Image 1 (cartoon, rainbow, N blue to C red):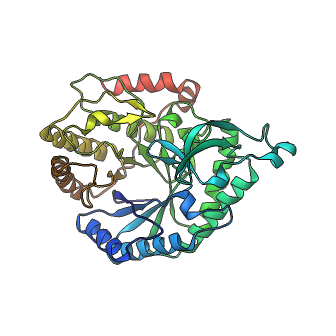
Image 2 (tube, rainbow, N blue to C red):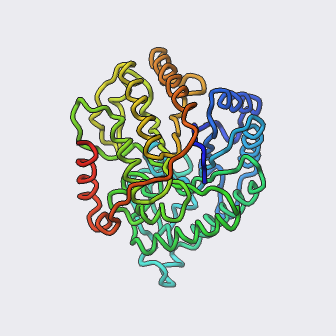
Image 3 (cartoon, rainbow, N blue to C red):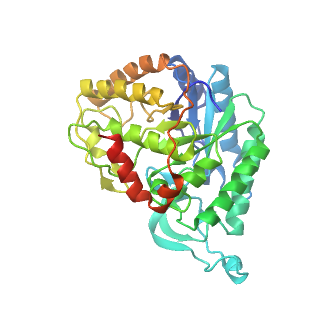
Length: 384
């Protein structure tokens, strides 16, 4: 668990040809800015190109990241079994094949569970031909191998404190809750066996709050900390209300449902820009978000951090690019605003030294029966 707030940021790189010197410098810079963790998210297809093969070069890069983080007192949150990339399904090619054997033996009802348009397969757009992701032997063997090898190898490293498992699985398949629960329990049990004492996390996003088979209750029950994906469905609020308010609400709801500490994972597009708010999208649908001035954005974050602290949130994952350099797709003014807002957040977070443990309890049966209706009712009560 954690008794200090997590202040983390994703660190992206070319995992097959990373500049080790630049990597160490960047991670040292994160520590200087007061962050506590770096989030490492190697693409699944890079880390595991075949079901029983873990890439040696990516593992070496991960080890360099762990060593660099430990040298400056940072922890690492490593994402495994990541099935989503910027709101889109992304899988290794071996996880996009038919399960003819399972179908013939009666474990699945069809060799292809879901087929459709173009998704990211091995980093390129290809047609989806997905077998049952919870019952296909090839898939499950590969999933277990990834947990055993990667978590097992780094279990003794002092920087390997947190693992974030299966983010983006709501993009993958909506399946019966009983099937999803068995799969999830087995996966988490293996992770705890391989790395005893580690903090196991997962991510909750919109479909898991709105009735997906691997719902928030099932996903959150087995882990220590839940990361809340703030790229959530449209929540009705007046123009005068700041877009920070839905983030607070989502953390409130997820903590109440799961009864776990929550970390706010800010959406990468919700950066500190005077105009960037309009571009926030969820499942290719634009969110009706007002444009904020720099002063409004800073005021919003003051309110946000204060409320999150009071409600016992375990920390924040900042968007990539807020601490390290200037992204190529951001103009100078957007970078200046982001840096200004980031500086104010840094000051606020320095005073945030403890994590609360109290969470409002919800009627889980009522929520499970009509999740969409209950979510709207809770939102109305929260935003009054």
